[in-house]
Length: 119
Length: 107
Image (cartoon, rainbow over all chains, first blue to last red; front, side):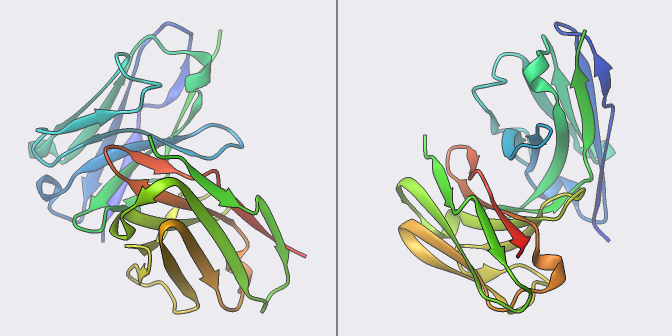
């Protein structure tokens, strides 16, 4: 069974940093691109960042470029999101999602990690 | 950057009725890069349709997708109780873009 489980969320002050992790299981992790998608309270979905299977291709939304860094460790079946210079508008539920090759879509999602940026 | 506009914002229907949801792109996009998701309250999104018209694994045939160019449609032939939720379209280009969502609520 495919599973992706996020961790590392919490309450953080503006300007501080936080690192999210996503543990994957039930599929060959290093065969697939992975993404982070966030959802602010009561709002819609916003793509944050994506990384190819070998980390050779990485992309970011303009809203986080220069502040967030995505990475992966295929030996540990894990995806990460390093978030620096956090702002109140970064408050959201952060989902880790697996990309389905050739479908141009995200076929498995975790339950999310809540990040609250507040003083 | 492509913008996806979904309409209507809210759709009020009864169980058993047909739902038609629209997703319009700000410029023409490849159908193979257009997907639809359903998000129930308190849950993560679930992939319904990829490639504009192909159902994802385990998705019942009451869900169908169509369209090309700038106009795409998700149709639910007969609404079941679990279908009252929010639906998002998504385009995969140089980045991923989501529409603003359509909420299907019980009338």
